[in-house]
Image 1 (tube, rainbow, N blue to C red):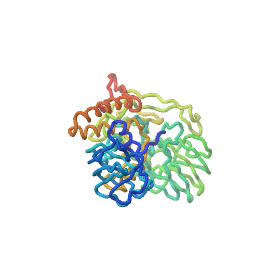
Image 2 (cartoon, rainbow, N blue to C red; image 1 turned 90 degrees about the horizontal axis):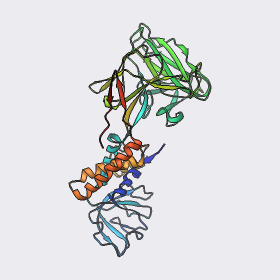
Image 3 (tube, rainbow, N blue to C red; image 1 turned 60 degrees about the vertical axis):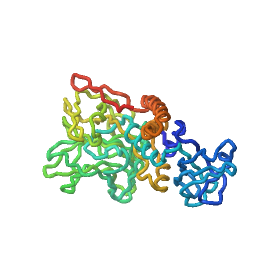
Length: 432
């Protein structure tokens, strides 16, 4: 899977003429008020005003001024010295790499717009489990999971064939170690529940427990709740909420102090339900097809790779404020159910105005394809500065939109026809 840095996405804008020069200093210039590059800036073909009023940003440098942004005063083309204001914090050394932007473009604006492109334009369909468990697929991190007598580590993109976004590796440091979900209050006493979780055991015996938090006891389970071998299989159990129980958790772990196991997404549902509330999407427009898995791997059933995923018809999507509910015409069965969510990528920065913040954003990575993220960022930058130079930025905008449409078809979520009862509803896509 691709892993592109914030720096790489920003420098894609050189393709659109938004970055005028990317270079590297060749020697210290003897002062903090200038940068020397005798390879690119020592030229009779340049004028003192060639980069006047342009911003210069230092990036990815092993030198001493990484992440600093200054403004160009003038170029001494006979010495290859670029004079700047304000001064750098120190005289740039020969490890300093830099970008010179088109006049008027502030690099911090570009970083903000890069993150806006990732979080509001670039997207894809992602299969996620329908489950009462918060963060049942460990989608971005392990928020909602708490380790006790164990460590937990998200294994991003390592789940077989990347069917799911991630798995979690639980390594016990004491007996009865576990990774526990947040408490679940969605079930009533005497409700039946069904749970399925893929697992690959690296040491000892792994288990799944449904914990009655109210009474501090484990709920009796039917089915297979333990596994002992490496290679992916699945734990499949069912049970009933005790009459005096108001709160439950799902525990992934094992009894042995040396247990190590990798767990996939947790499917935990009320048996026979017809309405399910989805945790993540804020709009029904971002909910695609609904699927049911059959012939899925378990300790007593089929093998990994034999599963079959069929689309479920007769599911209505209902919007209640910022919550999406799925209404099934037929009661759900004891099988894993999934839905497709249109998900956007994560921002790479949390702050944009300091050298340290810029360095963090430059080093952060995303699996968004570089062409896709670059075109979306160029579009937003062109829109931001359009009134400054309508002719130039209008041309950039047209080029960016053309490329973005191409990359949206290539990398983005394909339009889907959603069957609700007897009529077809198209899931809207964001316009580019």
